[in-house]
Image (cartoon, rainbow, N blue to C red):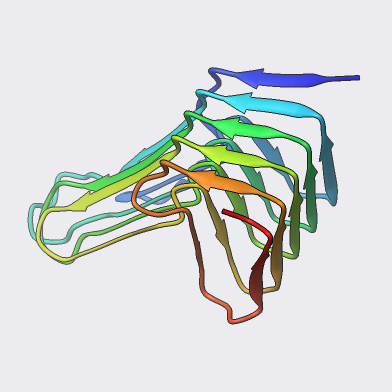
Length: 173
């Protein structure tokens, strides 16, 4: 049948002081996952690293507001739209904030076919040091990813990001 995941938030969090992690606002998967004919819309992940120490900033990580997958992921004929991943480290120096893959974050192999990724937003800010944002639509990490016949549009800051040269887009816009 059809599945719709709408307006969920939260995810897996970190426990250390000054460390905040939010993964998988709509779906978090640690096992291989296949999504068919689904809609994943308006989910959020938000990580704010703080603490009482104004000198040492925190580390905030927010990934996969729509879908976070730690294992192989297949997505076919789905719409993933309006998801938001935000990370902030507002206090002190040496703060780090990372927001990646607002629509989809894949930590292992990822295949997306006939899927629409649109209007997803990854945003991050840090008081003084480093912030990273990539893959408003999707972020593919460490292993290969493919997009076939996908529409990737109106995502912020970009359509998809990757840290591996093994990601490809075929017949996709």
